[in-house]
Length: 453
Image (cartoon, rainbow, N blue to C red):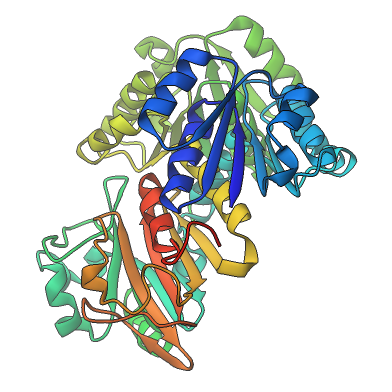
């Protein structure tokens, strides 16, 4: 497919890198010629220098011949206009990034009146994941999830002490034909291989056929395991803080936001009901003590600085707060997370890119998908005979550590695969992938005989 991306920021670049792994043709539009020069030097993409809002530029590049356009510049209004212009000029599918809270109550109207196919709000996407975690506690509602002919179960390793200290290779001998597809350890999702072992306090994600998982669930599932989140403190009154405070307040939790900008505090106060907005520095120990920091059920660090978010989350964890969540934008910090013991770390760029990719792939390829703790995605797709993964043993696919083939459904048969399993045309394949490794998942969909579908 031919895909145009207007705006070479974090989201545009993430989407570009991922799409290239799937052998799509990508064109980047940006006004900064130096940025485009660096992109051209490092990636096999077309670049167009200029303002994507100019109709003449869109016509000159032949936007009507593209399959999709994503508008992800730094301004909502510009993104809406670019996407609308591209649609009028013949681009069949257009996507716009919209972040302003003022647009949230009129998203449907904007989309319909401007002829847009999809709107993505990164801050609201990450907020939804945080809310789901805090309110439902289980990422998978009730602890289990059905997908196709398989079921995935989530439970704490301590529920089966005999698993603690055992290698992943030992699990089939202990539990039967099941596969450990993910481990959540100290807030970080790990896609395990035979070198990994299960540790105490790990959250395990197991895949197997329905009957086997159902029996296992009876032994380990905590019935009604929902959070008793009553008191939540949010550091940072930006867009994510605003959206989350509103959702949690409506749920019934007592919410406090600490925001360093007095002007922003005034803005928040006029838009939030039953939320205590505090003007101050969230890193100030005296302020935290005055606001009963230690008594919070949950703490969310969502300032505009990754370093500050990690510091605050570490402080909260050391003070014994049960649920601690941090918003992090830099992938380079992901290695620090496990050692810090934070419960959940989310990257809005990765989550947004995942949503956009699923929209682009559509129902022709993707049957269903489910985010796991906002860091990994479980996806079910139909295998095509022309895909690179078809008719080859899984051991020869060169899958990185961040991707695992969890199950293969062939007719009525459900296969829990091993390295010798070959995927055939028409198989319904379930894979799990870290969002940070999304480009590796796209590689699974690559077509063998040509460049495009």
